[in-house]
Length: 313
Image 1 (cartoon, rainbow, N blue to C red):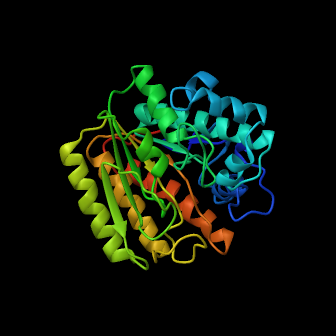
Image 2: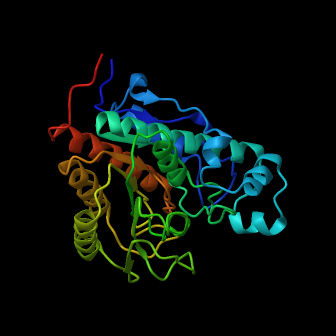
Image 3: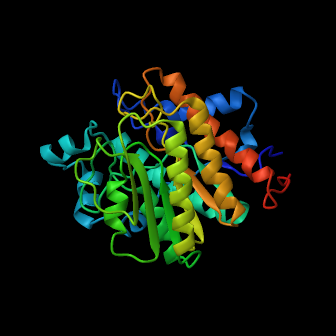
């Protein structure tokens, strides 16, 4: 019997097989294990995704890029730009992550919240990857649901410490998708294509200013755009002890951020699909704690609102 009002989407194949790397891609398994160890979730609460199909990926990405990824024929420059080692398992993991985000988006439409314990690869562009991101699962999921007629309009609320440059570029001329990115301005990437709303934060921004600006920005965005689905990019890297970030959010501040976004959109009757994106804390257990905590906030938010309902047997 399920114990959660929504399902956690997870696959052991999410590990990108990076070895010793600043991006601890084993974290996806560690987050799942932490949720089970805490008795937050049991086996019945996990949904196993299928990989995205190449047809799904081609809704966003150029055929040449997809072919080079699948056949291992990336150029040296393309691998340098990705900043992660190439392997067949790495490619398979990205296709699984995209399938997981598609599934999480579908589940969100059914249950109010869909939660992928992976995904959030927002730096991938149609014809290249960068910043640890080979394909953009966020965009692929939105395009797949639009193609299926499940939604017409979507919003991306990107709270990773880094600007969602790939997502902004993909949807830049598309009025059916609204992109909001709140991020540290003086950080990767150097070039930041315009989102529909960019909230640039100064180095060292802490909880109070972050939450105030996010709250105001999200309210303004939802005043002018009315999505049928929100994809929430819940990066753990605004944390004060993140190795690749320069903001100063505390653990409590990050939990408040999750409540603000997930609770705020559920209050408006909008389903939300959560993806986890970055997290590079000096102590990896902090990243696991933060991202497992996002799932716990999602449970509280869904159960405390009219949308919440007892899980089926």
